[in-house]
Amino acid sequence: MFKCVFFWCLGMIGFASSALAADRPNVLWIMSEDNSKHYLKLFDADGAPAPNIEALAKHGLTFDRAFSNAPVCSVARTTLITSCYAPRIGTQFHRKAKLAAMPEGLKMFPTYLKEAGYYTSNNSKEDYNAEKSEKIWDDSSNKAHWRNRPKSEQPFFHVQTYTMSHESSLHFPAELMTTEKTLTDPASVKLAPIHPDTPTFRYTLARYHDRMGVIDDAVGDLVAQLEKDGLLEDTFIFYFGDHGGVLPGSKGYAYERGLHVPLVVRVPEKWKHLVDAPKGTRVKGFVSFIDFGPTVLNLAGVKVPDQVDGRAFLGNGTSLSEVNARDQVFGHADRMDEKYEMVRTLRKGKYKYIRNYEAFYPDGLQNNYRYNMLAYEDWRTQFKAGKLNPVQSQFFEPKAPEALYDIDADPWETKNLATNPEFAETLADLRGRLQAQVKAMPDLSFYPENVLVEQAMQNPVAFGQAHAAEIATLADTADLALLPFAEATPKLVAALESENPWVRYWALTALCVFGDEAKAIAPGIRKSLADSERLNRVRAATFLAEVGEENPRPTFMEALKTSDSEVETQIIMNMLVYLRDHGPKIDFQVTRADVKSGGGEVERRLFYLTGVGDPKGGKNKKKAKK
Image (cartoon, rainbow, N blue to C red; front, side, top):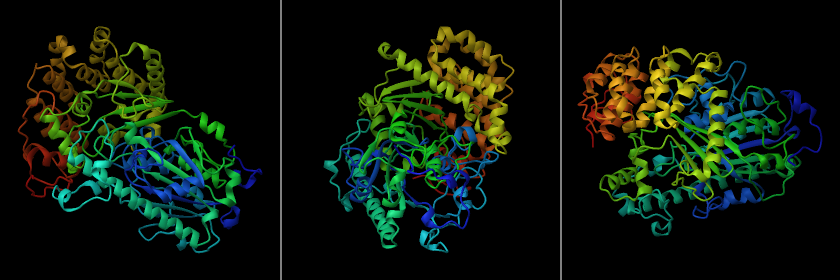
């Protein structure tokens, strides 16, 4: 059992601010950006060696099933700092169009440590999608350090983020592959089956293995500082990736490669009574980012707030047997920069269920930042040239609305078992669990982001609770896409007559998922081109274009020219890029004069479509497309 050898009464009521370090442990979080567990030999036989991280594991715990709940930084980091599911509290979009208010009565968890007498510091990335709690950090800067606390006996919680493994480290020019050799031999790396075996992919993966060596050196240096300060055996050290990634199809995507993170916790000698597992233990239970904050609070003896979604996995009141019995984790992906899609996942044991609510969008839909990586462009070039096998081609093709994978047998999620009768019972179980999850939160993403920006961000949790019944109806409407089309047809027709515009929205979305299978009812959908909601008109035009029944350009151009919401415009442009690059491949001939842009994600799309502007989203900068 992870247990305390005595009942820590003070921990149940919090500590006075004058408490000394001797009263409770220090906690150090070391985060490296954009690396899933696949890049470290400690977790994956094909990963890179990391002796300093491995040394932490020998003196502590290795968590074989630790997960970010989201596959991108701002959403993942907001989940860490709030201990709440992002789709429940309105923080699920990367990058945020508007900050969400924190749930009423809840503070970002370091605030509770600070109130209990801890020195809290962060070096230095925050990237939160929620409004910061007051007094969360004593120092959050590139100079923040536990050494800056006013008294050496004061306990501390310090967060250190290392950026050397960020995906931007793989944004290199082609000539670098001939002028700069990697320490790792490109011929020695093992490529994922989803990727083509090309010199670009081999060099990119080898270069990233080198990056993990740089991270490991930095971890070693920081631990050495602790030891020099005489604090090593008084400090819990967490090392983990801030989400998955980073090769194409990982970061930004709710597959294991985007969600499954490395996690090691070094247990200090002074506080080993809080963790009675032997050194070197590998923990098999599922933990995720919602649990990290409660775990730190529990180790510090600070009460975990009732409003959070996570549960502690270390410290007083926890046990190894109970943690190892945890076998379920929820994941989600929404907007990543300018690329929209709603995906929800539920893994239970070795099985992973994925619900692609907008399955007509291929994973490979343009995202300017992703495609700065040569490997992304290489992958797409190989696809267009017809050089990929079926597994490698999946990234650029429409997806199934639901998927089921056996992660033990198929760790790269290439063989969808959802249509295999042998797995019907497992599919129904996981589908039901996920349906219950999105309704119970309730999941705010069943409303388009512009609706949430306009109506919900002042109090997202209250908005969700007030609209829980409606959200459940929207979820059921979206799930009509899971039925055989003949069975779904009368329900879809009825939904299209609903007075609720978002019921109509999800019915039209389901039709886009059915595609050609629904072509017979296309004539009846034309009336939706006059829907009172702009997004519904555009989604109807998308479906009709998919089945070859309508030129969508008039509807799209009218919508772009009349929309006063940049967030709504982003959603429209997402569908436009889909129809231009995939599906029927329609040339919309968009010009800058057709779209109202204040910069940001709309500007990214405009640059991609027109070649003029700023691919990073700056406002109206004249820059030729390369």
